[in-house]
Length: 82
Image: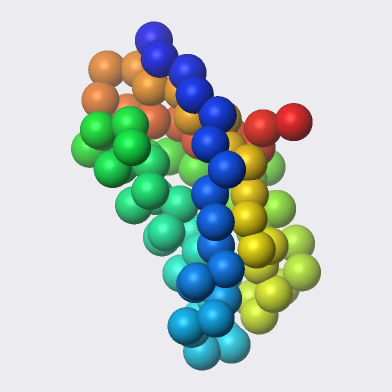
């Protein structure tokens, strides 16, 4: 079992996206980031992390988020790191 903490920047998603697609694109960016850095096929996002992204609605996700990623076999589970 491998465990890491990352700070994932989401500002480029915010700046380059239409207002009503920002939060879903932030979720996709987190998944792509963890696939690349943890070398995994499947990434699952915890409910707490999902709520943090959607906290201020679809138009205003956070600019960066700290994520704790735990890898078992070929599956990464991402939770909010704090």
